[in-house]
Image (cartoon, rainbow, N blue to C red; front, side):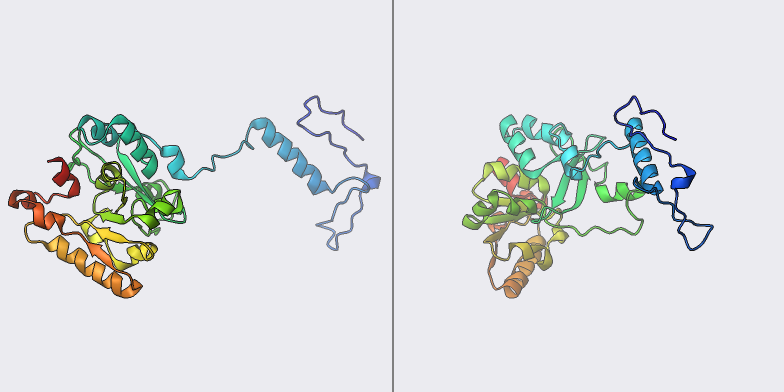
Length: 285
């Protein structure tokens, strides 16, 4: 018997086989292999039927397959606004820098510094909150996107992300040529990298995200590039010595010199060293 054709063209008409048209060939009589002669298998009939129903219910709508960082892009975070209001960058410069580093924004107004490597692989995202004076809000600790995903059951509880240098994705874009012609500069703070990319665009600016986040393994993608490290300063010169040791080790491993700038050690005042300034502070103070 045949059912009348569906009025909705999206739902296929279904021919229900007559008993005489069904061949039961299964070896186990409890699980026969139904086959419709000259038409389609019973399981195919059900497959097409359910597909039509899913379409009717809207369950087959295409999912957003963009990388996570793409649908979190934003220049509306307090950090981006403070870059302009505090005079570090113009509105146009801020927009360029935000696009360059793919800055995002969390639901609670934090800036997301995505860590994307030279192969366009997303490692993680650091969420940080800034005050209107463009200094970090120390009352709100930084957090990681992977942490929030684990808390919401979207990643396994034992998931551990492997961090990379902030801005490393620039090596895979149009700046690849630029990075081979000019030096790649590495600083500690993501904020510093964002600002310096517009203040000193002749360098390709990357950031470690922390004083202790610099190591030889993180420098491997830059083994074929001319690299200059710009450590923050302090009263004892500890940071400079630590980064100098990493640069020496990287030079031995990769056979290419990694330079450490001493500009802050030479030009920063005693008060500035006590405040642990970086290259941005030296330029704008």
